[in-house]
Length: 233
Image (cartoon, rainbow, N blue to C red):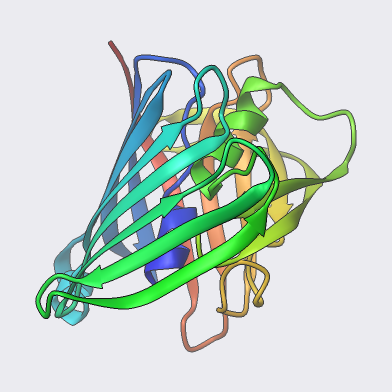
């Protein structure tokens, strides 16, 4: 579940000094709050469930990614996980040249390693956050279908992204003309859960991350993340 939350909540700006605030909705309920902040060297994201959803399954995650100097390539990830009764910390590092990445996850309560993974990756690989930052910083792709090298430290794939047309989207932050994309991250590509992942970027020079949506089975339902407020420092 936490890996899915990372992608759902990982849409943000590619400009320094921007903070985005989001609201997550699940089954017509306000399910969580997300705060995303960006600097030229990396980014910080917090994820918190609220209300009834929090009483069912509490999430209070803290995610930090360090970019490799002057680019949106991921250098390292630190993920502090508070989900239900779990208190884990995961670290992933990625090489500057083609080689092996490293992933280590530790159970903080038991003080023991629960997972280690090494992957063969290219010299520039993106976690899902830096992939979106890269897409925003480079402007709208000319191709309607393209791939990006993506890894969460546990899996690596050349993830296919498709443009799905233009849509007008209304959120608490306003009304936006957007371009809709579908990212093939689920169904075992990066994340195990079955479903479809979409995101909407404003159709202008800033390419603001306006909405993210994950459509899963009837049991899990659909989660929609909408932009509530944008702040600049």
